[in-house]
Image (tube, rainbow, N blue to C red; front, side, top):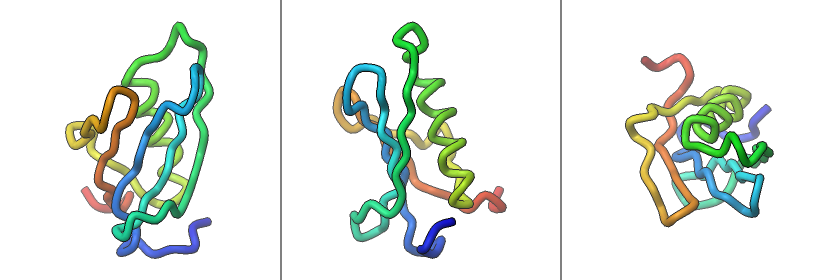
Amino acid sequence: MADFTAAQAAVVRIERSEEGRWDLSVISDAGVAMGHGVYLFDAAHDDAEDEQAAAADFLRQYGFRFEREAVVGDGPDAYWAPLLPLDAR
């Protein structure tokens, strides 16, 4: 499990690192990567829904979620969204 607190985790970052691979990172409010995952996919299924679903699954292991409406583009192949605790609705 995570070795950081909910107060430290700020955003999830979804970034294409190469064809067929998206890197998923939990970033602290200080800008430090605190958790990392990889989403590998078939090019025929490369769309925003798949990346966001993969990021949501990745975040659950750390006890977080994000609102899909809050996802912000950060360049052509990068996105981020603020984190919320899983139990906060």
